[in-house]
Image (cartoon, rainbow, N blue to C red; front, side, top):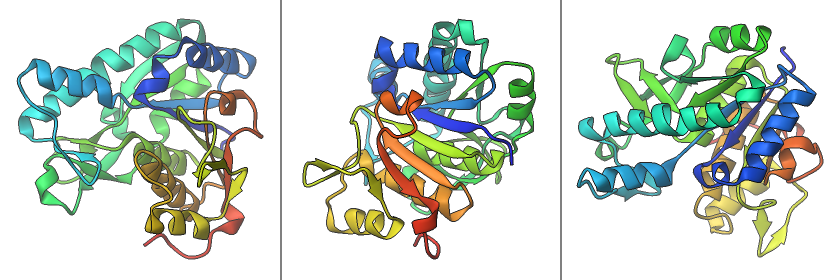
Length: 255
């Protein structure tokens, strides 16, 4: 197992200079210690509207047709990715997408109405390991190569980060959000079992953007990642910050 973490930051935390500073300092303190996966949904919605296309969602997932997938590439693999690379220049950041080098391969989601939206099927860690060994910080957009037709799929950033963590054999997956921890009736949780995570999703205590984060945590744990944390920028440099989801608490496979 390579002792590296996978960190995922969403579109909103990317706009916070403090998050970028935390990422830069974490890398400079321990070069080669993590891979960064990013989202960018708000920026994608803005671009869609600029092209006269109103964003549509089904159960929280963005409908992505054949025309939209090029906008996804433009936003996530283009503008958002390169902006992060520029901000992390001191860390020798290199921007890639999941389409590069087989880093992320996906199959179409079971809901055909979503169009070119995929679910991760595999992640080849070779390119990421090459970049890490050369002292570069990989910055990865969650656009995946289709295993079915060679095209691209839009993949949820949390799911993409979980799949990459599994492929790397990462020691930890950290999902960086704009909240300090998973909340249960407004109270922050220091730790969470997989069983409790599933219950929170089922009964609605987890909602909105927290649901895909918990789903991704369950996926990563089920496939061998020993530790997942969900928190804000403090979780980048403090191993005790945020909500810890322990692999030891996991029993069975996510449904």
